[in-house]
Image (tube, rainbow, N blue to C red):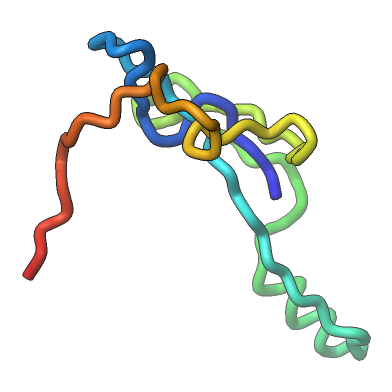
Length: 99
């Protein structure tokens, strides 16, 4: 599990109009084979881009660089698991449409 801090869901804190953003948690599930023969290994290498650095135009409006951090469950805080919801305003916003 990795975290991108302050890039998760918005939450209103202390009944204010200001929004703060929670953390975005990413869980990777990767299953690696126990072994690969040389031919399969070469085929896989041909499917993926080279390991050389990728040139990204960071000046573009749709590009945002964030820090991916290790997940530490001993310090992770989920406001929904707290004893008191007094600091959070869970007013209805956009709702799912039931069909």
